[in-house]
Image (cartoon, rainbow, N blue to C red):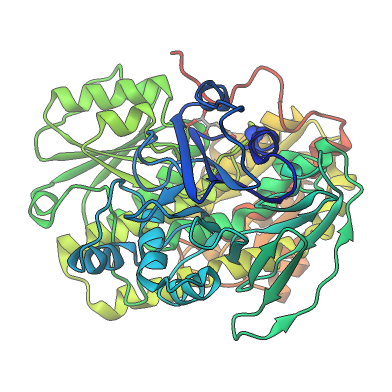
Length: 608
Ligand code: F6R
């Protein structure tokens, strides 16, 4: 995830910025940079790779600065490279900007700025902002930033400096965190508290749509409608470990709570309200998609479960047959592929060896390849014809959570995209799905607000030997994911099963008190799953339901029930997986397990 640090004060800036950026390293990044105001001009230093690479080009003796901004970049638009790393500057090199977030309308702004003579040097959305500030600059940096931000759609935390107005640093935020740190020697700006904790514990939280002008000896916050806001600092008592986890007990829990914004960021800029999907890096046009007669999906583990939802969506909406396989099987079987086949490979890390091998196999047969990944510049992005990015930010917990829900969101978009090219469903259909998707982040928030209920369940169920998860339709992959999450972090034996298959064998596992958790979603298989729950109950199972149907029939049948908000069929997979993530998490904690680093598992599986 990108990180921002800025400083204005009496001390030398460079070591302070580097130290702050170092504190943000744990979040993952691919390049880093600094912009320093020195004797009336800006010096910009940027490097691909880690901070050691940046430090190699820093000559502390020559960099005598009291104002500067720094950034660690996690690529979203444009590959990880020196020229795409922040800070970005305007044409004159007198304005420098660091940015976290996504500027949705950067294409149109960039075209407009190029038409009026601005020259761009990177592939990033952020550079647009530097030129936009330049276009509005009249000697007052704050005014220029304010005007520039009025043109921006999307999310941002920014810090901006100019050699033409060197007594201030301007920062602002919308949907991306930003804080000030008040130290003896001056004032810091940062995207996250850990960046500041070595220097100060006096923190001022900047709220959404606020802009702040920071000088050596003070700061002035203004709201979006230009009203002056008085806000004092708070004292943070966190140690560095707690600060890195944002006050959560573990990275996994933090990442579970980051899911509303991970989904929002994945939808942002890729879906408009009319249900039109825009993928910057897809590189497959209408004709190529029209030509496709069969789709294959390959992935592993949690990514495979997201793929199972995509299969349902594509077949239902685009009427193309989809085969899905785990990558380790696909690579050694003889799938019937041709140049009319499309392979969708899903991998959050972009490095999974089996999935890469699956791609190569499909390519040999002439298939077109789309990768769905969270990591710009990862191996898979270099091997695929086109890429769809999830914008979940780096995930530190080994168990995938926010990357998984972002995959489902991105795959729903991809399914919409393919359906639109392929069979001309009417616009109102896509509009309805878009409307429903746009409400998913707040519904996830609503579910997370009821986490205490699940915590209570964990006390009741943490010492069982077996746990069964059942579902039908989109509930089936969700059940699979629930079982995988539970086994990987709590080491309880768990099975995820299609509910209708239970009677063909697994029902023999059920006896008194074995928990059977059903994903019971309204729709054409609702009554069927209710019957399957009945079958499990009559064999002594403890029945738990995750459902969007708060009715007496379900209440009468269950020992525990969690009601999720209603949504469209496909995105209800996102909503119903959240309680399962929480359940695994709380059960694992009850059992004293290390949820962030479960035994025998790695975040990125680069070997066969
Ligand atoms: C489970 C989990 C794994 C990964 C699998 C594939 O929580 O994270 O099952 O989903 O190893 O990884 P990627 O998506 O990186 O290919």
